Length: 188
Image (cartoon, rainbow, N blue to C red; front, side, top):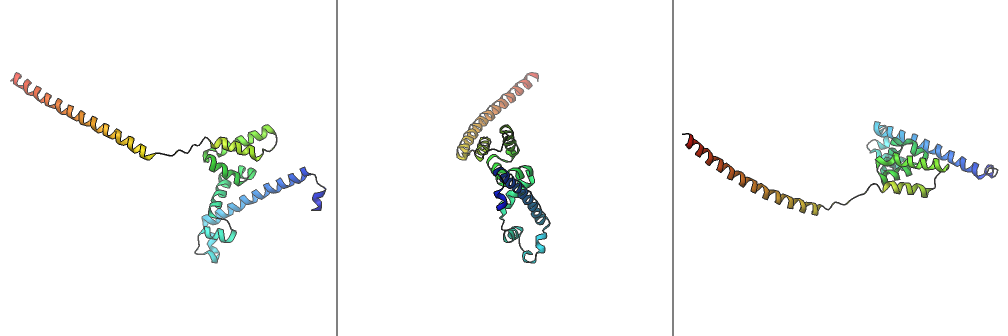
């Protein structure tokens, strides 16, 4: 650690950022290998996991759980640039908070804000952008009972109107029959 004593804080931080980016790139490669093993089922070539699922293999061998794998794999597959730049955790959070259709626009907002400030945004500012975009999705609770009651009321009204219409049709048919008889008597 003596080599770090001679460096400025800016040099040390840029070295850490370079290593962090390199680490994320290697992590992306690792998840690509995992996807290969999962889709080809080559993990079963390891005799210990011949009759096991991929999730058992992944957790036993690499201590990665299924949910973590799925989230990280989705991030690296669908949003590779954002995952390397900001990390899979932030990509996953944006996906959960804002929905899949908003991931790209949220990261475009973050990037635009960074370019405007000409430096990386604080975590708090990124959270504000996510919350602002996440508020576009409103989860509503459906009141199924009220909807059923309204539908039942409408159904009863419709049945009543149908009865009235059928009654009127029958009356008109009867009138038409009387008019036919009267017309046939006049003609004959």
